Amino acid sequence: MNKRHVTVSGVRLKFASAHMATLGNELEPLHGHNYSVSVKVEGTLSNDFWVIDFSKIKGITRDICDRLDHKFLLQAKSNLLSSTLEQETWHLSFGNRVYQLPQSDVAVLPIENSTAELLAEWICTQIDKELLNHGQTNINLIAVEIEEMPGQSGGFQLERTHTED
Ligand SMILES: [Zn+2]
Image (cartoon, rainbow, N blue to C red; front, side):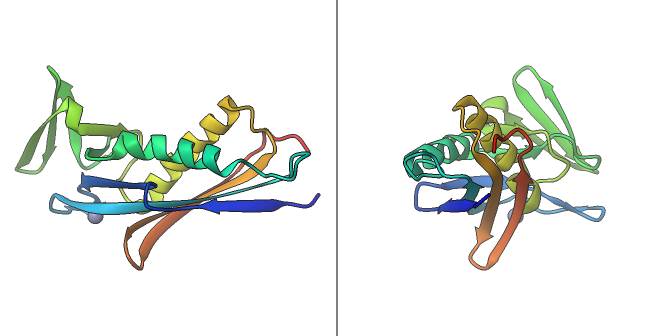
């Protein structure tokens, strides 16, 4: 079976967010990035010779970026950074460093660490869900690359099993 692919990236596939990743037993200082996202989807061609409509995959990716834009990216499954939500406020602690953030400023992600690699994986699984919702069953591979800054990116690719050949 011939596989074709499309790739999207661009000025609107971005998000500006704050985070603190852990490295070893250390927690980074609070800081932010202007993240850029590129997505490759591979699959079989439709009868009119498309893998996917560019505007569809861009729209899906942009909506996911919007959920992260101007938020603190919380690695809710971290073993090192503890996080609890009380009365619409997130309480984060690491040793004697304590942070409080309004719930509305936090994107809670079910990941162990807020690295570009795991952010790419989370975005990839969200795209996968949306493609299924759109009935896009011809796609067999989704690859996401997240650039934290020029020349520094992390990626993830997911091979879909729920495709039709
Ligand atoms: Zn960073």
